[in-house]
Length: 44
Image (tube, rainbow, N blue to C red; front, side, top):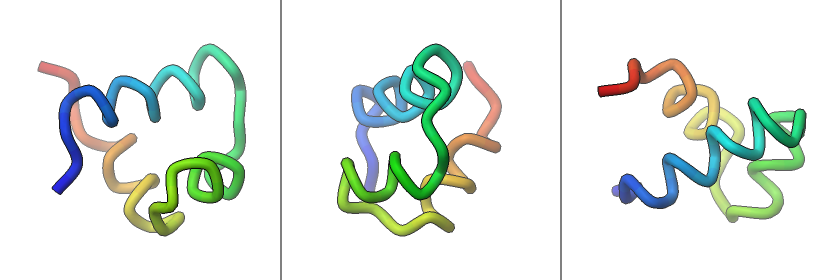
């Protein structure tokens, strides 16, 4: 399970830092599919 803190980090890396899914996955230890699915999750 990914925490809200981790989700925030992933979104910052993708949106602000313009990192690729591959780079985010490498840095977080998550799979690219997991990163992709969490980025598609609507913000609350």
